[in-house]
Length: 79
Image (cartoon, rainbow, N blue to C red; front, side, top):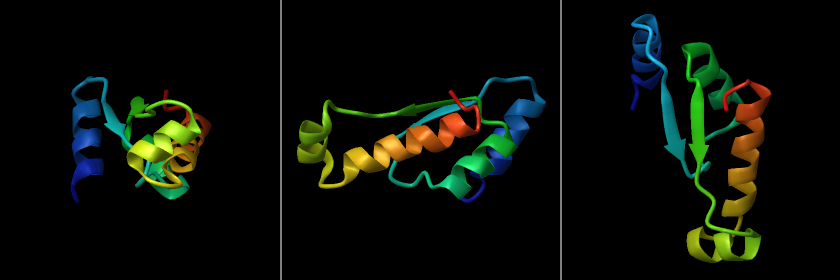
């Protein structure tokens, strides 16, 4: 959603805890920073198993993207 950051910020302004889940594909370092600034407090990244299984299910390179998404979020204290 184009208004995702505004929605997160609005929910936080109401005192709500905001979380979401992702495959990790769209979560770049920049996007993680923007989510943290907006107030995202929880992020769930889907992992289907060890690398071979995860990549078999979601496509080659998907495991690395999921791990990268976790690192980006943890660097910004999004748990």
